[in-house]
Every structure is written in structure tokens, then in C-alpha cells.
Length: 635
Ligand code: COA
Ligand code: AMP
Image (cartoon, rainbow, N blue to C red; front, side, top):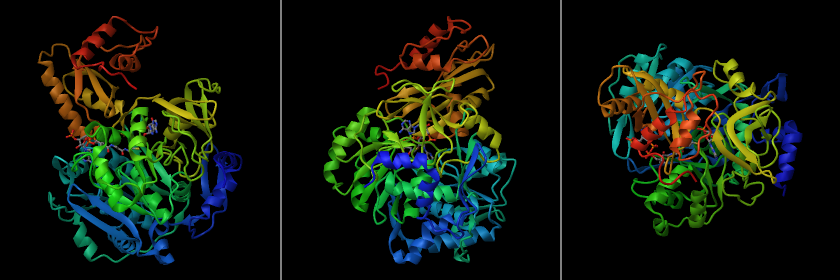
């Protein structure tokens, strides 16, 4: 068997040979002419000239191979008390019919379809139906409110929006349709149609002529066949937070994506095609795209779609139940989910009620995994626990312990080593490599492997500026960290204004924009502060207009509500303080890093260019009124 070192070296020294071989696992309608097109460096493209259909590779091909009876998708929803299994053959029927519905609404290859849905099988069916037609889907997470949805509608300009009447959270039903209507109202570009899945928990009112009922549309639809597309054609756009309030539309292509994800199922996760894989995330995030939908299905495995939470649906044993009941082999979630379980059941007593011996491995990602959580999971589950590091942009893991190649010793706090294909380096701000064990900018030497973003939707210049300009010849991850003598990578912090709240990526800039819209707010700053459960939570600082003489608590309550209405509950924005002024440099830059250090109870490094150091005690005092720093600083 090849060892990690051999496989890694080959992937870096001969990327074309390496990925040509991996591409053999995919069905191509037309073979590619070139493995790697380097005609427009620094923009690289994989598998140029090749044609394929991602939906065919995910669904039809397994049916044609005689595996139609095999379970493709297990839907498990403690929130509605529903369980359902879709064989590959059944999934093919549903997907091809929904592709027919979309085609009937005028959707053709290259058109965008926005999907705003809870965790129901129809979300996955919609995504695959788009892929079937060569249409480009853009899934928006259900926890985002109308304003954020409208931004994405305007950028992606979808012809059709697919949604549901409601999502279900443990303590409430969330009507989606009013938010969708409001978003369409706010958007400058209107879709021509919507398709709405009616859920009995809250039926939606449909606008005649524009809104179509999912069930009715499906009843009369003709199945549509797979449309071969170029390997380099976009499969989807997934918006993620950047430095500004305008989200970045990460583009994923068809060919590289299929090859990389298929390869990762075996080599990173160590799964076999007849096994069950469960990513407890949401289809609205990259983890959901790659490992609830595309990865497991490309591989012909069984995927679990779980509409529930780690705790409260009904208790902290929910994950163990699903693992037992569906025979999950490889499980993937975010550390915050395990912190939630650990908080409610510190000794994992509920595990005793279930047989999880079928589980081979747990993978964690989405945020830094604190060593406590890692050890708790290892101790209780008694399987390898793999922290792996990736981003919406990369689409799959940059660093991991690739169990399907070689299981390496774990070093707590490190997502292990660079995954084959990823030439990771640590550079200082001038672009020079830093010695082992020293912190710097984590970058990846170009070309990035297949499956990573080729560009941003309609924003090639922003792509270049955001990712390629800082360190020519390299992709900038915007994560800071180090590599030790053994090549283990440590991811420490973001170098930009992105924060990570319960594994959800948010832009402080977007949150600040909302605060600044309050008519009595003159200026605002948001920082991400350490939180034992969510990893980070946002804390707002606002300066009120001169002469505003209202109780601060009233203003803060309005700000918290505004954030919920505009960004969505997922921002978990609960804390803001009114201050007289913000700490700034003489050139007017807000010192967010200094504020964050104060909030986390660390000694801030105060830049010499600070306008007035006297503002810092004021900030400390304001933080004290909302309980920061917390008694237990960051691990
Ligand atoms: N639709 C509507 N509202 C939603 C929602 C959705 N899809 N998802 C979350 N919300 C709401 C929640 O109900 C909550 O509302 P509240 O303020 O009224 O309580 C709020 O948004 C905050 O949600 P969250 O921070 O997710 O807390 P939670 O208690 O609902 O769940 C976790 C906690 C740990 C289970 C959840 O955050 C989680 O699964 N995180 C992992 C994310 C992940 O997999 N990321 C992968 C990235 S790589
Ligand atoms: P997202 O694009 O939402 O997946 O967020 C990506 C960011 O989350 C990364 O740039 C990191 O800052 C952080 N992240 C994800 N996984 C890890 C991990 N395993 N360790 C440390 N940080 C992580």
C-alpha cells in the first residue's frame, strides 16, 4: 500500500498524472484534451475539453451498473418524526422529474436556480436536478433572512427559485415563504417563477402565475435526461462571507469537482462504496454540498440527510441513535456540535443506550477543534477522530489525516498534514517562507487541485485580488498558522474580518453594515469574541449620534432584532454595547484586533499609530458591563 509521503509527493511532482488517474473513476461523455490548462495563468482549469454530467455520475450511472436498489439517501428527521429511504432508482425518478419541472419553467444549461430550503430530500433533489440540466444552482442557507437572500438573488440572477413553505427549528416553525417574498421584493432582479414545497407545519400562500406547488408540478412533469456539460462549466455558486458585506460567489466547476470529491471519499475518509456516510451539516454550507450531496453519491455510497440537532431532538443521544440505526461508518460534523453534546451529557452516559461499534471514524471541520473536544470524542467513541481543515473556497480538505492512505499519529490542535494535491506553505508578510514552528500566512502554491474554486461568480478581478495578489503564485487562505518539523499544520486564526460562529462563517463587515443602518447609530464595529460553545460570538460596539438620549438597553434591543431580521438568527448576535468612541489608528482604521484581545482577556498589542490610547480603558469598561472577558479564556 502507498504511504502518505509517496502519494503526497507524487501529487505535487506530477499533478497531471496524479489527477488523470483519479479522473478514471468518473464517467466522461467526451474525454478531456488536457488535464491542466495553463493557458491563462494564474487562472488554471482542470480537464479542459472533457464533457460529463455530474448528476449522471451521482445517480444514473449507479442505476445502470445494477445498483438501483441500493440506498442512496436516508432522510432522518426527528423534528418532524419522519424517516425515509431513497434507493438510487427512486432518486433517479425524482431527480429526472424535477429536472423536467425546471425545464418546463424555462431552465436551460447555464441558467441559475436559487435553492432556499430546509434539510429535506427535495433540497438534494433540486440540486441534482439542476446538475442534470447543466443549470447552476445556488443554495442559500435557511438561517439567513430576507436581506441576505436578496443580495444573493441580485448577484446570481436566478430564473427560478426553489423553496419550501417552512423550516423547522426545535422550538419554532420558521415560515420561509414570507422571507422569500420579501427577498424577491427587495431584489432588483426578479425570478420568473418559484417552486414551493408545501410542508404541513406551515402552508405557504402561493402567488398565481409565479409560484408553483412542488407536488402538483411533479405530478405532471416529464422526466428530463442528463445534459453533458464542459468540465469547466459551473456546477454551482455558493455564497460565503468575505471582508465586505457583499458575499463572495464561490464557483465550482463540474469536472474537477467530480474527480476530487470521488477521490476524497476513499483516500481522505477511507470509505467503501457500499457503506454509509453521514455529514451532520446543512445543505446550505459547503460541507453539505460536498459531503451530504455530491461526494457520497458520486462514490455510490449511502448518504444521511438529518433534519435535527445534536441536542434537544430529543436529547444529547441523537447522534448515537442515527449512527446505530443507519449503520453509519464515517461521520462528519463540526466541533461545536460535539461541544453541545458534551455540555449536556459530559460523561456521554447516553452512549450506553446505543451500539455505535459500526462507526469507523469521526471527522470534524468548520472551525478550529479545541483539544478538549477532540479528546472527549476519542475517549467516548473509541474511533479515530480526525480534525480536518478546509474552506468554502477549497470545496474539500486542504489538511487532514487521510485515513484511506495512511493513518498518521494525531497531534491535538493540528488537522495533521497537507492532503495530496495541496502544496501548503507558510509565508511571512513579504512572501518569504518562515521556519518550522513559526506563525505566518498559510498559502497554497498554484495550481490548486481540482475541485477548488476557479473564480468568483461574475467577479474575476475580485477573485484575483482576494486570493492571488497578496502572494504571487499562491492562493491566500486568509488563515494564519504554522507547520512543525514533521509537516503538521496548525491553523490558528483568520487574518481578515471573517468570524466563525458555531461553524458558520460570518463577515463582521456585513454585521457592521446592519448596525450602521440604525438611524441613531453614528458608527459601529463588530468583533468575534471567544465562546466556549459556539467557538466565537459577535459582539457589537456602537457610537450613537450626538444628542441621542435614550436608554442604551432600548437601542441595543433594537440592534439585536435588526440583526435577526436582516442577517438572520444564525448570526447569534445577542450582545452590543454603546461606547463614546471606537479605538482607531491615526489614519482612522478601527482596531478590531486590539478590541478582540481585550474581550478575550489577552494582552493586546497596541499599535504605535493608535490615535488615543485613552480609549482602551473605556472599551474594557464597556466589555465588563456585558461580562467580558469571561473567566475561562480561550483554550
Ligand atoms: N433556519 C432557520 N433558523 C435557523 C436555522 C435554519 N436552517 N439554523 C439555525 N437557525 C437558528 C436557530 O434556531 C437559532 O435561533 P435562536 O436564536 O432563536 O435560538 C439561531 O439560528 C442560532 O443557531 P445556531 O448557532 O446554529 O444554534 P443552534 O442551537 O440551533 O445549533 C449547533 C447549534 C451546534 C447544532 C449548530 O450550530 C450546528 O450544527 N453547527 C454546525 C454547523 C456546520 O455544520 N457547519 C459546517 C461548516 S464547515
Ligand atoms: P467555511 O468557508 O465556512 O468552511 O470556513 C472556513 C474557515 O473556517 C477556514 O478558513 C478556517 O478559518 C476555519 N476552519 C475550518 N475548518 C477548520 C479546522 N479544522 N481548523 C481550524 N480552522 C478551521
